Amino acid sequence: MELYSPENPVFWHYAVTALLGVLKVMGQGWLTVRALMSEKAGFASPEDLRKTALNPDPDPTQLDPNPRVERSRRMHHNDLENIPGFWVAGALFVLAEPPLWAALIFYWGFVLARAGHFWAYATAQIHDIRATFYTVGSILVIGMAIWTLVVLLV
Ligand SMILES: N[C@@H](CCC(=O)N[C@@H](CS)C(=O)NCC(=O)O)C(=O)O
Image (cartoon, rainbow, N blue to C red; front, side, top):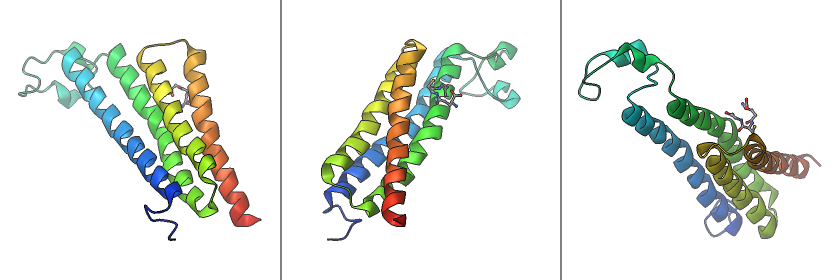
């Protein structure tokens, strides 16, 4: 069986969870756009104050930071610090030919951890809750990287 084929259940689960990560990263950008459009504030660049169909009534205060927009940007930034590592480590983990149960824990555990991180950040839960979800996701990515390195090097 080809390792990188949908017939390999490990790769199948990687593909599905990696694509969920793509949707999360892309979707978070759109959540920022939605916040910008509904708040009409938090714009990033001076040219965003030019009068256009999307901003018919520009106002200099629109360049002031807006808490909702900034939160969405921080969430997007955090995704970009974590999800690309999952894409790379998760894809190479297939080479380690892990048992399916392990792949399920690493792949779906990461998805659940990032979903929890999204919920905790979006609803302004206390720091330690958000940090717990972050830590679980991060450890799973680090775990896949170490597991794969050991298989490749030892
Ligand atoms: N760049 C992150 C690195 C550490 C991290 O990702 N921490 C998690 C748990 S506290 C987090 O949600 N950080 C908030 C953020 O990145 O906006 C930071 O400065 O906080």
